[in-house]
Image: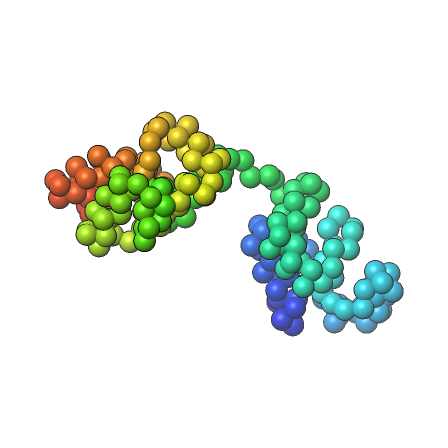
Length: 183
């Protein structure tokens, strides 16, 4: 239980990065609190160490997280595993119960098929997440292999591929789309 906002921020960053970590309450031991300032040549707390190396305080940890540097260091030091493309795809697919991989965004579809699927979902009142495959070639190519489905859009429900435009429109026309996406 952090006793200051800066410590709380570092704890949250480590949790977001899925890091198992230990902590020491410097308020419980004045000798350690004062000695660590001298040892590290760092006058404030919290102090984040990775494998015995001082990384910095909360501002530095936050900047490193935003830039991706923290994840890189944690991976290099063997603290966390590097995310594979398959792990990344699974994470994206499960980021929303109904997930649409499309060209463009729901507000600005960049192809007719994506536009038709967006309209079908909206007409049925179905909430959905989306990912613009035009923004990431690795995801676009990887998803074709992962799903064994060569075209976009691709609609997923609870991590399972439903299909592309033709299947979504067929489900809607048969009155089965909403039921399929809420089982």
